[in-house]
Image (cartoon, rainbow, N blue to C red; front, side):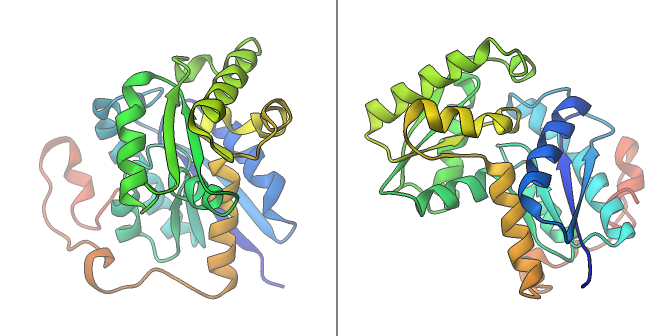
Length: 249
């Protein structure tokens, strides 16, 4: 049996978050899948704004390009904003799945509607926009913030705050499930499901299994149209190495 290689790419530069995402991916991937973890080598330590997201993209795309050179079968973008998802699909031959995309789609199978519980309130609009992009508006009943910064999610004391936010979201929205709105929450699903009484979806696990399913079916990215490989052209200044092959090898 051929071994499948899935690369979980953290678009921020905090290695501890990469390791958390990788553990959650490995927990569901199965023995015939190798989960490779990659931390962006350049960019912000966390992604909590449009500005952060924009400056995270070169590092993310460089990791996708490295994966292509290494023969990786598919990718998970381990950030709930799904930054650079479409650009990454242009570069990759295999499937590239974002955790917001996969988490929302998984939750839509579990009931009539779901709530998203995320970090800072300033990211609520971005999550709502993603629900619209993925055709999930009819299922997404609300997006709720805990106002916990991403880099504080590893503090055991915040578990109670997140659980309270999940319970409040379910009550306010009448939801049947919760989608966790940050890769840094990925290890809390079992705890939060017990606390809320509804299924709590981790997008890292959902994205990993989506990639696995697509690769198992022998499906790859379409090579035509919008997601064809980007045409090579000169890039100037700090991004000059990205131009000839689409991204830094």
